[in-house]
Figure (tube, rainbow, N blue to C red):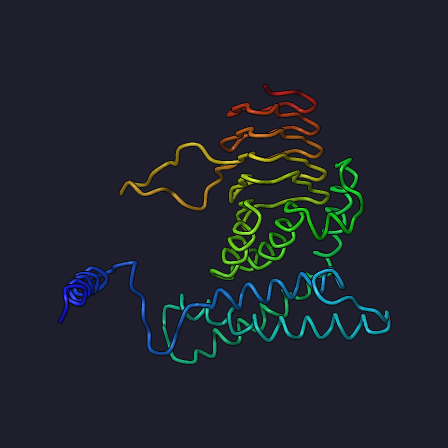
Length: 291
């Protein structure tokens, strides 16, 4: 055995000991249940986007008569992929850990059906996002340019898909989708954030929007904006308390300029303006400017 093989053997033994410890979060295994496949979850979200914007992310649909078959077929492909991934997400966290859990399968079918029923509303809202970007950016030459090229529109599209799943308490999948969008746009939106219609992120790189943010209608934000939390309250064991309001509420029509940081469970009023590079940890009245 050469030196490298000996090192690999020694390292492997240490890793096995480390991951095999009681309650280690680094090692999860069950002979019949596995985690959702990230690539498949992402593929289903991309198919849904293709159906929401027919002809933009696939080969052009030359014959309008084929639009119906394209949309139906694309949604059918997405459903076929995402249903077992939703089931796996529920099974993985199911307390019974039962093989072929019929309860998880039945729940996944109901959730999948309810999710697809929300898609027309998602498309309606996305149309307002496209128009907000086109009307809000003099550099935008067309709505097609916004749909195909703007990272803000890409991020909000995947966010609206992820948020719908998050509202239904589907484990893991919403975060997988949001982190895919984060990886290709540089925009980090937690799937729990509630965002109104006509939302526009201009440029977008470095934007962070936290889990408990509530953003109104017609809001515009620029690159580098953080809508985050302040220090976290801890429980008796010193762990962060989860499930509490930590992030800002942004009123209708507010504008937040580049590299502004807005922290905590504060309220930014309607049509307020947050200046670039500012640090805001207090309420901002409607129509006011925070510098």
